[in-house]
Length: 615
Image 1 (cartoon, rainbow, N blue to C red):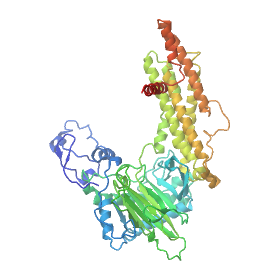
Image 2 (cartoon, one colour):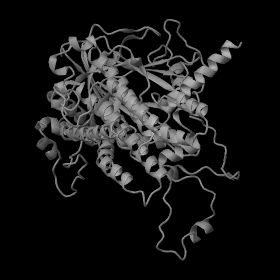
Image 3 (cartoon, rainbow, N blue to C red):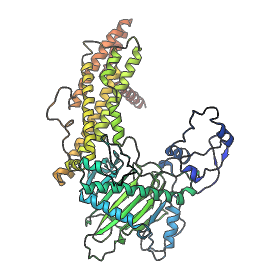
Image 4 (tube, rainbow, N blue to C red):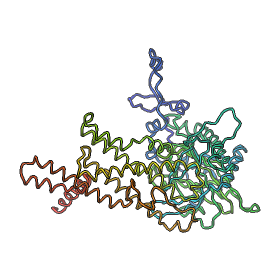
């Protein structure tokens, strides 16, 4: 984090003072408007409300950039005091080097020792972990790093957060358990102020066992506490050192990834620095809002109560990175920080942008629970987003009828453009529902589905919506197949092109997912943790209104229909062509089998080939 406290230059070119920490944390932008002008801004217009300040994300992007442009951390100028290891720890003979390096190159990382935290926080975490464990919520994830072969995580985990939230990493979308009560549509029910109820009644109605529901609600209470603690840390350690002063990222955590790590002998060793067995490899947390903070609580439970092994051998490793996409900074040694059970550490503001962390496993026989509280990006990753998108998507039949019957109110060109735009949006929505939601749910197995009771209704809605979109697509295909016999004014080549391109993309994605289902990793897993059939996608028989699963054959038909349509269009156009040679040339130039985009690519490749031949 930059500590340069110079006055910054405003967009208008005038020098202005940095804003205060108090105003920045309430999303107030820097301003050079005079007090008199502000006072008179709404005089004479009492009904006009004052302008709302820009959202925090917009302010951060304007004044501090984005994660990818965050500069590399400062280089530590000191030297390691020991040649026995390639990293620094606070347990070195001389801890001053560790402390100095932490403050210089790892600013933004802070941690609370167990003794500095209130006993109620420890009890709440322990109770929540136990309730989730008793409910069987912890499952292995099957992920795909780098789009290679699938692999099973070494830790079991579950996601808890705002109702409808998800978290996607390494090709897998995790579906959250809600930590508050929810209504029938999956939204948060505000907690009554007057009752003494601890909450969870609606979760129990969904089918969550009493102790599991209580554990989820308790995690939501814990999260509120960690939000307050993280904001205090931000204001103390970060806000005074950024420009504009006080403009720090969000700590409004909306979900937590809870891990359970069993003792395992087959863990790989950390080979780059020789830190020992590694539980979670080097990484930066993904899918988070820029400049958002992360808070992690760790609890260790000895499997053998009589064991004399110290849990202090577990720890978090840190290394400084060269900006958004660079590798580790060669002149900054990594750090290994031992974390006893009950530790809470923070990665504040932009720390996650230019640092990586890893979890180093202890040598004893302890089970490690951890809860990583994050500010995930909202929007496309929530049930509310996709629910409203499919709910309010216009009816294809209505759009088509309007286009066919609006010759008097709308120009021919606008009719066609509107229909093409709608069909493109419709096909994109089908792909989104299928590959970002439905297949992500069914690949995780029946056990996962049985545990995630909140999501049963949303998944049914999405399956029904996909079937409705598919019926609309089938009707459109019937229309395009009949164009040769009955010409429709709203049909164009572009309409064929949109469907050819969309179905080609869907065919490619389905082949990708088919390979996923066949991966040998699933043969090693229990039956109820393997992918299971989806009623609206994995059909036993074809029914009317459904689109054929043989998309390649359907694309071939579309090309033939397109060619016939082009032939009819050209025959009309050629009546105006004067000479027979020009007519022949016009017909030869467009076969109609290729989309406009493919024709351009083919022409471009031919010109490139001719240029190479002439060399």
